[in-house]
Length: 174
Image 1: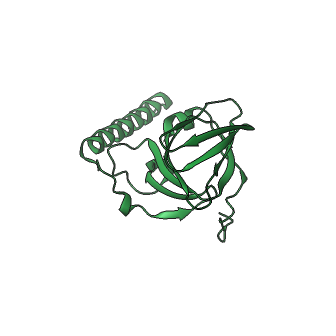
Image 2: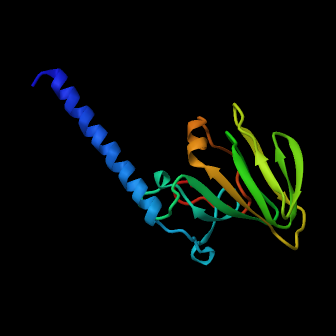
Image 3: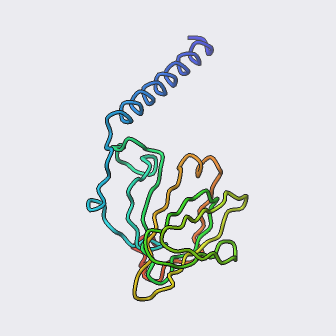
């Protein structure tokens, strides 16, 4: 078989894989889970804070997507004192659910309270940020929305600068 024919065969195989993937994505978008129940989502301690993930893109997971949307990372953080500090490309929308506090974004303080929307800009070199609660007696809670496509296609890099004080790394340091 000449090299040109082999090349065309491989191209058709890849094309068919793409078509099948798109068909599955379309079907999932019609039949996937529409309501994500908060009580079914566990809380876990991360390098950033106590977190509850509602949506997690399947490209970051080994499980098949079950939600009608598969390109969003949506999570709640519970900030008792402060979060960890990290830097990434930005493009985050954070809605404050409870409490009041402030965020240090690239060295500048931004105060917020329940009902506010905090927007982290998309920036070359990333956006360094950390979140603080103002009231020791009541945690602040917020929910973040990240488009995985924007995050990845923006050539984002995630750099952890400071862990949450309650985070304890496991055996592999994670």
